[in-house]
Length: 442
Image (cartoon, rainbow, N blue to C red; front, side, top):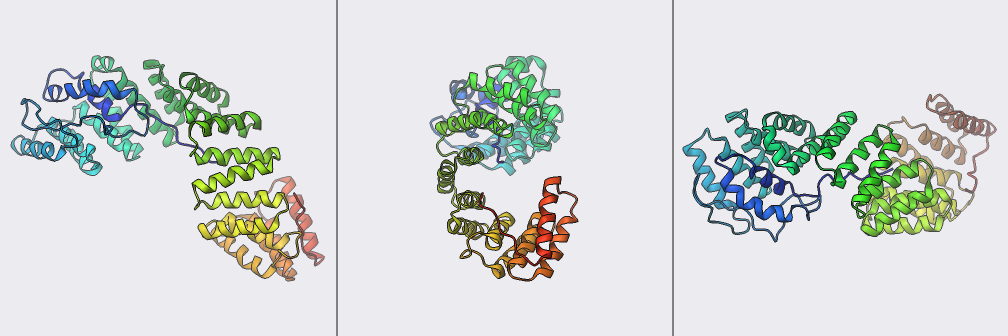
C-alpha cells in the first residue's frame, strides 16, 4: 500500500528563517533581515508545505553594501550582487560567521544547496556556538533529505539558541521541533518523533501538519487509535488537509473499514484531483468490496495520471481477471512489463495467466515458462509464489518432472501459512498425476 509523505510545513522555511532572525538581539544580521521579516510574516501563514522558496510575488533579498550599511537592493532575485558583496566581506573578515550565514542564505535562495551547506558549515567552524549557523544548516540538510545530519544540527540549534529567543519566535521554535520530529520519523525513531511533534503541538496547537505527522508516527508504531485521533484533529483544524484524509483512509483500509476508507480517499481526490495515490488506494478498496467496475475506473484515472507505473497496469489486469476478461488482463500484464521491465510481480501475474487461465486461447505454456523464470530471477529466486508459477507453467507445457521439482521447492519454503501450504500440496499432487492446474474464475 502506498503512503503519502506527510506535509510538514504550512509555512515557507525561508519565511520562518527571517522571522527567527528578526528576534535575534542586535547584531550583524538583525537589521539586515528585519524588514524582510516584516514582509515575509504577512505571507508565512498562507504558504503551503511545497513552498520551499520565497514565492514569486514576494520581494527577495538583495544585499548591496557591507556590514551596517543600508540595504538598497530589493529587486527580485538579485543574489549575485549579494553574494559578491558578502564574498568581499569574508575576504576582509574571514572569521565572521554571520557573513557565511548570510551568503549561505543567498545560495539557498538561488537553489545552490551545496554552496549553502558549505557556507553554513564554515560558519559553525568559525563559531561553534553560533545557534543560527546550526539552525540554517539543519534546514538545509532537511531540504536535501539528509535526515541524520538534520537531526544533529537541529539538536545543536535547540541547545545553543537562547530560550528567550525561542519563546519570542514561537513559529520558528515549533518548526524546529517539528522538523526534527519528521526527521526522526523518516529514520524510524518513532518514539522520538512523537516526543518532538508533541512539543511542537504544545507550542502551536493550531498547526494541522504537526498533528498529521504525529499521527503518522503513531501509525508506524501500530497505535492506530491515537493515529486516527490525530488525523481527526488535523482535519478539524484544516478541512482541506489531503494527507490527513489519505492516511486516515489507509488505516481504515487496513482495518477492513472499507466504506470509511473510500469516503476519505474520495475527499482527498476532491481536494486534489491529481492525487494518484488516492485513486489507486480507492481502487483497492472498491476491489475488496467487489465493486470491480469502480475499481477499474479508478485505475484508469491512475494510469492516465501516471502512465509509466507498472503496478497500476498489473492491478487493473488482476481486476480484469476477476471479471473473467482474460485478454484484457493479458494486455495489462504485458503493458506493465513494457513500462517496467524489472517488475517481478508483473512478470509473475502474466506467467500465471498464461499457465493457468480457464481460457485455452489465452494459455501458452512455453511463453509462461520464460516469463516465470524472469520473475524468479528478478526476485533472486526467493519468492515461493514466483517459483510456484514456474511449476504451473512447466505443467502447462507438459514437463511434469520440472513442475514437480519446482513445486517441491515451493513447499520447502518456511514462509507459507497453513492455507497456502495446503493449496500448494494439492497442486503438487496434481502435477504428480501429470495434470496441469487451472485457475478458477474469481
